[in-house]
Length: 417
Length: 159
Image (cartoon, rainbow over all chains, first blue to last red; front, side, top):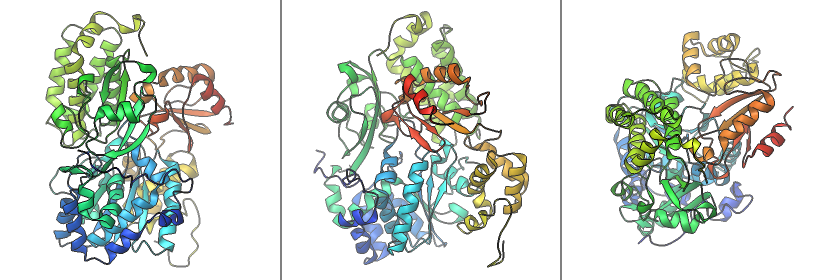
């Protein structure tokens, strides 16, 4: 079902010099770029469309289609931007590409620049990744000296705002402004950075391109789910024996990821809950872990693939506390632009906080549902929707724990893995 | 904009190079704020004024952008910036207990500087090291797999 197993994102990272251009080229690196440069731009876009590649940042939008829209816009210059503002809690997959395999990203960006006739590229790198910045600077210099980069590529360092992972906020932040999402349309593919057509793709998305161009769309379509092909990086954290990043075909089940690759729940404890795609995706109970992990399947099982960041909770974890900490995150990272999110996330956090602190009131669960219902669908960007859906799904799957918590403060009970 | 060949001097002279990476001076604002923070220690009134002057921007514009981002410091900080993650993946591995350790040992509270001016503490929302949590950044160094003992051991290497 999930097809051939080949590692093309992290295949070389056990080599201690994997970030060096010579090691990358020895392993076949930059051959795809050579091939792309011998093709017409339009053919490269066509190949990416045929491959069915979907954006790895969380939304899963078809990359070829995004490129086609930017290509059709007559305005120049065009920009390509790499979204390396990896901030979704639980996610550390792009960091491993940035630090261990930066040339696969740079090669992907060079292919994209050729396809889109882009004249300038930026990598928006989160401020919390200083080590990645140094590796990238070296790698960009190497690629420029080698003649692999025919356009200026610069690193733009973020400064700790999660919302800048949203592409219109990222574009404003790159322009020197507060990072607040814009109303869409217009979309960045027609009016993006400096008002020009701009393609923003995630690190992992760019890193898929060399394989697609080198081996062709047909080979790529043999990996993963036909509706959602290719490999995916799954960063796994929380209560597992072997946390880490695993490169697996799209459609690998959550069960296989947790029990085969991550070594199972820590200490052989029972699984209590799992967040499948980073904090902003709805929590799943243990009876849902046969869910295939791809953009098409996870929604059918009641959550979303998001960034693919799997956070595992063992029996004994207080999920009221997890829900509270999640909402504290949304409250803190709300950009403040629209009222339902700015005010609502604070209310959700405050209600969860009093429940967590043993001061919950009868009716608080209904109040949480009411507030969340007034955020969902009423905000500029998905941050508010995420916050609402996170709160609602913790309650949906673990209502009795919330009810019990309102009656008895869990900190008075001896629990915890 | 400086004339070619002219030697640029004074605060934030390095910005002239950074400005070339962007088509507008406004777009150089975030790198300018990073540079100012390195040069001045924090974004004081003088630092913001120097940025505004270099980029030909109103000070209000500079202040507006600076105040949006949590890593731009609007007050003076300790010699070492301690940024510890307490988000869910680190929390379930014990990150909150570490805050109590820091408070007990150094009198450090989130958002504050220790009385001796050695450390400033900021609670972070995920620093992307969840597989080895709890984790923290001290200045630009990542430290992982922290325990009450290890965090003290690590911080004692920062004078």
